[in-house]
Image (cartoon, rainbow, N blue to C red):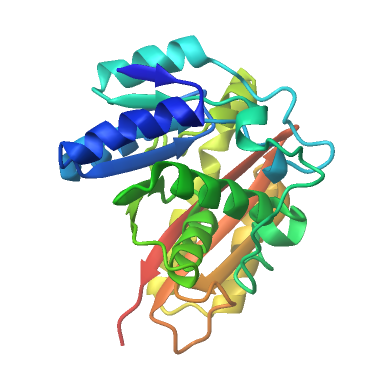
Length: 283
């Protein structure tokens, strides 16, 4: 695996890959990799002959008092993990390579409507930062396919809309959330949890599963949501949000909606956890 740090190096390598008629798959990450990230690499390799992973902790998607400065940088370990999964290129640029004009003068990308709710309601400009870095990476790599995890479901939907709206000729692939045996979704931020919090964190997915069963049993959406909120509070979570939304629009689900997603963000101590679960309803 080649480890590249400059856009010039990356483009030279990708030019050679295209001359060899490779189909290019892209896996963007912020590093501190876990098995969920590595399964994205596996998925990229299934349908592409050349895989590029990127590691860049993007300051634009962090708000004030969030964990940008403390976010784990583990490039050496990450490089070894990617090499073991037969990734072809790791692109790990510094901030000046990505934002050469500085953050204050940076052009940004805004995806309307779908970013207003859920994480967008409590993390102002977060999705502008996500949309901007994804657009930059798409332009830098120009992949045939890009692979993202479904744990960040709203992010995945934002990227799908961005790709369609800006006419990127890129296939966006979502990969199911990778979980611990307890059901806890793998996340780079799980490392912030102490032992007791880590044990309790699995109850988030348990509540989502209970809410899914309630909806499948024709429970009223408003009632199911309130029961879920109560369960999370009783289990010691501080709620950011728990919403039941249409998969297509991410707007509040209505009785007529058949494809639904339950989205949640909670705090355990200082650690923010997100998760979701999809529900398909039949008449």
